[in-house]
Amino acid sequence: RIVIPLEYTRVELFDNGLSAVMKDDIWGIFDITGRQLTPLMYDRVDFFYNGYAKVHKDRKVGVVDAAGREVIPPAYDNISWDDGRSSDNRFRSFHDGRARVSLGYKYGIMDTAGNIVVPLIYSFIGPFHDGRACVSKHNNYRSKCGFIDTTGQEVIPLIYDGAMDFEKGR
Image (tube, rainbow, N blue to C red; front, side):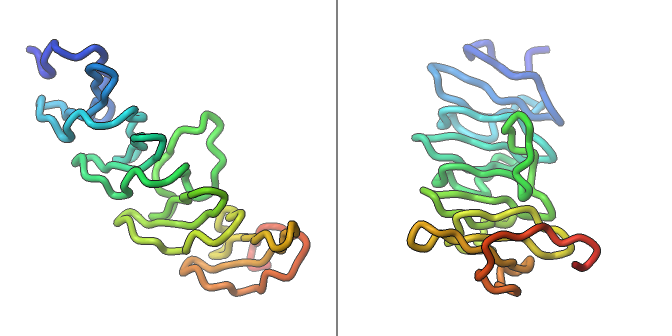
């Protein structure tokens, strides 16, 4: 039985019931029943992981969910999972419901609903450990570090030259 019409130049393997398809260098998404979830509109669709995939359009990046909804519109330079330690640079899904986004040289954090949890004001955001993440801002070519909590509140002021991740409360 043919699930996806034979008119596409490229069809990726189904992963968790979802497949990216390409025609005329434009990508879209189908589910395993053959239902088209998104129109052909993206420059690229990355693999789905835990129900989410990065989408690329006009040199910007966003995220779609397993229903084909754009949870983060393609308006950012990069989106990575919270700790940014993906060896192959693929979007591995949201980490604790959050993903790091960047625009220009500024970083922030968005949740799975596309809400900005931490505004794009930092030059660096590290992974959360024990509910805190190291952040830094450049100021007159100098970078100062501090920590934010999971709500984005600065809980340790950005006055330090360097910092290590929290572990076991310290």
